[in-house]
Amino acid sequence: MGTGTVNTGYLLSTGYSSAPRPVGGVVTPTNKLDIVAPFAALAGLIVAVSAVVVVKKRRD
Image 1 (cartoon, rainbow, N blue to C red):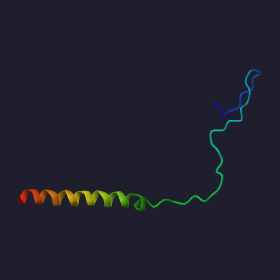
Image 2 (cartoon, helix red, strand yellow):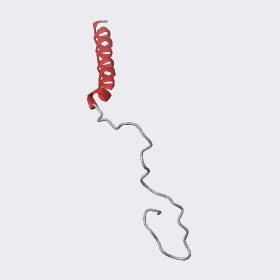
Image 3 (cartoon, rainbow, N blue to C red):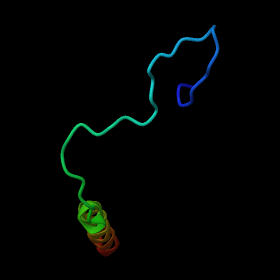
Image 4 (cartoon, rainbow, N blue to C red):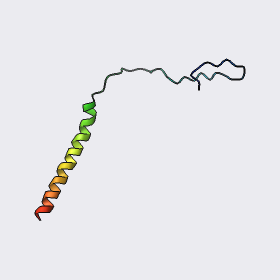
């Protein structure tokens, strides 16, 4: 589909390319801990609040 060259009299080349060139900018590696840390903190907060609620309900 547009990635190879076809030499027939019936098909027209659309100029389609499946791998576009980058426009600009700089590619840098991603620190995975920086991405996961907010979600881990939110999960920890939910666990802590749930534990407090369970402890308070058991005391009553």
